[in-house]
Length: 309
Ligand SMILES: [Zn+2]
Image (cartoon, rainbow, N blue to C red; front, top):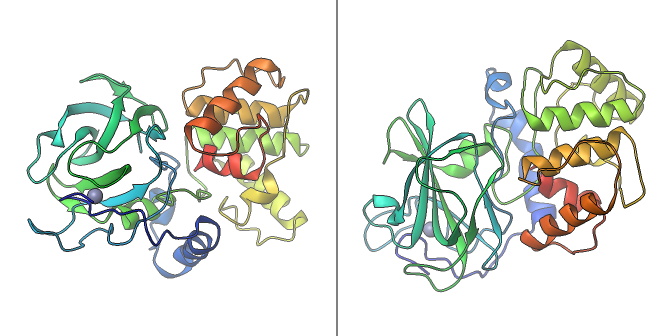
């Protein structure tokens, strides 16, 4: 428990059930017509874990309302940049009041900032440029806490103007804590490249340019129709599980290129050659270990979800 967090690790939510249900509900109920420009593929989940009891944004604290959302997992769990930007703070409490522990603040431009607190280890330096999904730190329990977790904040408008990070990321197709992302037509980024590789494995011949344009959207709609899904072109929590392949060492093809691209988003640094060899196996195992998944070197749906989320 911390003054900014109060996390105990109890009352964990179910990633599989509660999150999935919340994600499915969001596009229909809460996302405005401009969603296509919001769910743009540029944002991703900063850390895999669970929401602890009392760790929500706005929860009462002795010094004021809780400024972020806590995500509980064990010390050493990977923490990723939620979007591309520049590391502007790398210090105790992020240089902001009411916060303790090792912290990073990333500026994303346009008055948007993210804060990552109670870190065990920094993996980036001050003023470093980072990509979305790049590993920036390890989760920890530094500062005033009772257990390891990530204290994650989103600031919009100015540094210090916090907004609910669950809602902020949800509007950008990301399920904080873990879950399949939702990408609309017009999205761009490495996750789109992953989708294009996976669609090419289904017999398409798309240029893998990371841009979710007309040809890719049409290919996705065709895939969705064939899979019995609503053919809306949105790659979300219903489409992803049917789009990915369970892969292991010895496989080769466009789907392996997709896997390698997804691993590279998480700082693996692989050659995207479509061959699932020992180097790719090691990268999968490293990712699984860093995210507290079963470490078997195989890319099944749970590993895929953590990779692309
Ligand atoms: Zn917190």
